[in-house]
Image 1 (cartoon, rainbow, N blue to C red):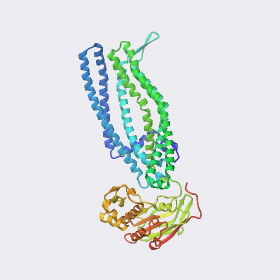
Image 2 (tube, one colour):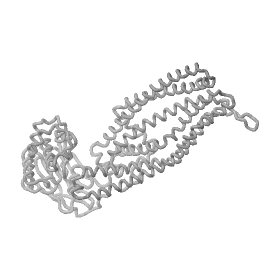
Image 3 (cartoon, rainbow, N blue to C red):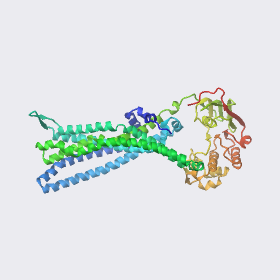
Image 4 (cartoon, helix red, strand yellow):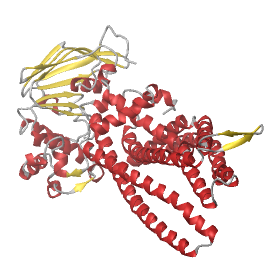
Length: 585
C-alpha cells in the first residue's frame, strides 16, 4: 500500500486541536465510567493542592536550615532536619497517592475511550463503510488499541503535569515577588526600582525557552503521525503473513513477502529517521536550557544576596523558589517532544472517532439500490441492477419473486460479478438500481463465499454466532453437527479454541452449514456455497436443505453442481447490462 501524506489520511487535521480534544471529551462524557473519571480527577486536584502547600513549606524551610549552617548552630540544624523529615514524609504519601490516582485515571479513560470507539465502529455495517472510506479506514484496530492506550496514558500524565506546573507557578510567583518586590539597580547614578525582579526573570527565561522549543520542534507532530501510519502498515504486513502461512508456503512466496516486509520496514525507518532528526534538533534547545538552569537560579538571586537584602539562607530560599517557578513555566520546553507525540496520537484517534460519528453510508457516491421491507414470506428482486467495476450487471428475468420454502439459483455468465450481487442483496453494496424487497421481521442468513467467520470462543459459541448460546440446547447443537457429518466435534462444544486453525477447510465449511441447521433461518442466501464439496458431502448438504431446512427459502448465486436439479425451483441468469454505464470509481 502506498504511503499517503498525513493530511490525506487524517481528516481531523482540518478541525484544530480544540475540536480534537472535544472528540476525546465527548467519548469520556458519554461513558459508563464518567462519574468515576470525575471523582478521580477531583482526587488528583486535591492531592496536587496539598502537594503545592507542602512544597511551599519545604521552600520556606530552606532559609532557617541554611541560616543554621551559616551560624554553625548544631542544635537548630538537627531541629530543621526533623522538620524536613516530616515534610518529606507528607510529600511521599502525596506522591504515592498521586501515582495511584493517575494510573487509575489512565485505566478508566482507556475503558471509556475504547468502549466508545468500538461501539461506534461495530454499529450495523459501520465497519464496512469505514473500510471503504479511504486511508482513514486502514487498520482502525490499531487506532483503537495502540493509539487509544497511548493517548489515555499521555493525556492523563500531561494534564496532571500541566496542572501541577500551573499551581506551583502561581504559588511560588508570590514568593518571588515578596523576595524581590523592592529590588533596585543602579542606572546613571540613580536607583531604579524593578518590583518583582526575580519573578520577571523567571517568566522571561521560560517564555524564551518555550518559543524556541515550539519553533524548532513544531514539525514533530506531523512526523510522528506519519511514523505511526507506517508502523501500522508494517504490523499489518507481518500479521497477514502469520495468518496466511499455508498459502505463502505452498506458492513459494516467502521471497515476495520478504520484499514487501522490507519495503514497509524501509518506510518505517525513513519516517522514524525524520522523527529522530526533529528530536535531535529539539535537544539542542531542551538540553541547553537544562544546563543553564543549573546556575540560572543562583545568578538570578545573587543580586539580592550581594546587596545585603537577604541572608545566605534567604539566597538559597530565593534560588529554590526561582527553580520551582521557572521549572513550572518551562514545562512546555521539557515536554515538547511528548506533546508532539500526544498531538499525533490525538490526531489519529480523534480522526477515527470523527469519521465514525459521521454518516459514512451517505457519503458514498453513486446511484442506489432501494431496500424496502415487504410482507413476511416473500423476497422480491425488482429490476435489480448492480453497478460493478466494469459496468452494470442485471438479472435476465427482470423481476424475481421468491416465496417461503422456494429455492432460486442465479447463474452468472462470464464477466459478471456474482459476489457483488450477493453483497447487493445483503445491503453491503448499494450501488446500482432497482429494488430489493426483504420480508419484515424474518431472519435472513447470508453465507459468503469461502470459509465462514469463526469467532474465537467455544464451539457452541461458534455454532450460535450472533445469537445467545443459552438459547439452544446442547442436544440441538449435537444434532446439527450430526446432520452435516461432524459428529466427532460434539465433545468439543464447550472447548475454547481458534477453530479456523484447529479445523480443516472442509470442516469449517460444514460448520457453517451446521450453524444454519441449528439456527433454522427463514431465508438463506449463499454465494458459491457448493463448489468446494465432494459428492458425498454435497449429498449431506442437499439432504439438510430438503430435510430440517425444507421450509427455508434459498437463494444461491453460482454453480450448484448436483444440487441444480434436485434442489432449485427457479433458475435465472446474471448478465451484463446492454446499456453499460459508468463503472463505480
